[in-house]
Image 1: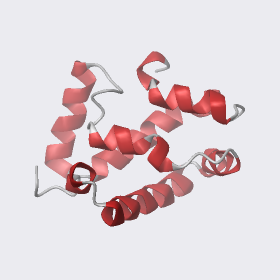
Image 2 (image 1 turned 180 degrees about the vertical axis):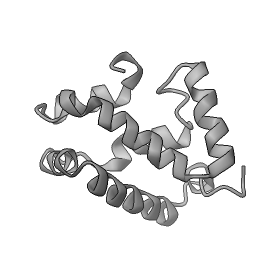
Image 3 (image 1 turned 30 degrees about the horizontal axis):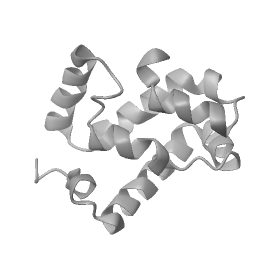
Length: 116
């Protein structure tokens, strides 16, 4: 586990976590520019939802069958699968999230298994 770039989440290394969040935000803006802009307007930061997804390797977001698939790809391809999974979640939820406000968006992101 320590050879993968997920370790900063467990060691609470704020500098590295911030860098990972910046990379995630760039990936998010590139793949879903409208939703990313909407999140900016609603002041929703990646650390408010992605931090938990990455730290738990999506165990709180999905059922065991789907989590094991994410883990398989994670151990094969590395941290990039976490970014891809997060973008996939947001892609599937984009229509539900794009017109909502801050107080409606965060509960959805914190309980994605109920919405996917």
